[in-house]
Image 1 (cartoon, rainbow, N blue to C red):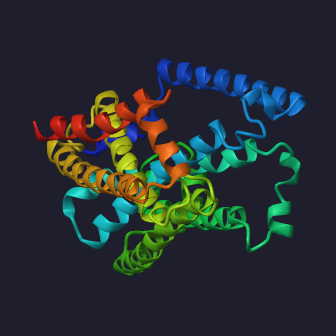
Image 2: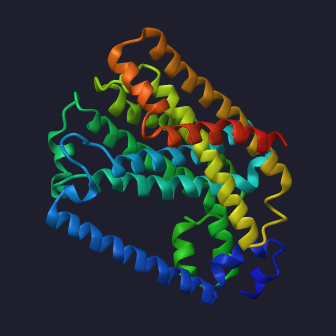
Length: 337
C-alpha cells in the first residue's frame, strides 16, 4: 500500500483502495433503491403488467423506452473509444476507459428491461429455444448478447496492465488482481500481444455496435405503425445513440472530475473536443429529424399526417418541441459560446 501511495498517479487508484463514510452511505442508499425496485417488480408479477399502464392499445411503454435509451447511451462509449484508438488520437487516453466502463454497465442495465417487460419472465429462454428468424426480438437478443460480450472483453483487455500494477503494489485483494492480470509482466512481448488483441477488438466492436442499434430500430420500423414504418430509422437510431451517449459521457466526466479531483487528467481540452463531437452529431440528428418529417409531410398520407399533427399540435407537443429546441438550438448556443 505504501508503494502505491508514492506513485504520482495515486489519485487514480485512491477510489479503489480507500473508502470513507460517503462510500458506505451511497451503497446503503443504492441497496434501499434496489430493494424497493425488487418489491415493485414482485408486485408487477402478482398483479400483471397492467400496473405499468400497458394494455392492448399501448403495447410498448416505459420499459421499452428505457431499453432504447440505455442501449443508445452504451454506444457512445465503445464507438468513441474504438474510433479514437484506431485514429491514434493521444488526447483520448484519459476518457477512453471511462467511456468503456459506461458501455459495459449501461448495456447490462438496458438488457434487463425486455425481461421486465415480459408478463412471463420465466419464459425468456423460449427466445433461444424456439426463436424465429422472422422475429426482430430474436435479432435483438442475439445482437445485444454479442455486443455485451464484445464490450466487456474490450473493457477488460486494456485493463490488464493496470490490474497488474495493483497486483504488484498493494496487498489488498492481491489474489484477485493476480488472477485477473493473467501473469502480465509488462515485457515487450506482453505489450505486443496486448496491442494486437486490442487492434482486433477495435475492428470487431465498431460494426457490432452499429448493427445493434440498427437491429433495435427494426423493432419499430418493421411494424406498419404510422410514424415508425420508415427506412431511415436504422441510421437515425445510430446517430441519436452516439449523440445521447456523448452527452452522457460529458456529464459523467464532469461529475468524476469534481468528486475525485481529476483535474490533472480530465482537462479542458477533453471537454472541448467532446463538445465539438456532440455538436457534430446534434447536426446529424437534426438532419435525420428533418428528413423524417419532410418526407411524411410531402407524402401527405392521412394516417402519417395525423401523427405529425399530433406531435406538433397535440397533447405532447410541448415535450416534442422542447426536445428539439433543447437538443439542437440550446445545445448549439451553449457549445458555440
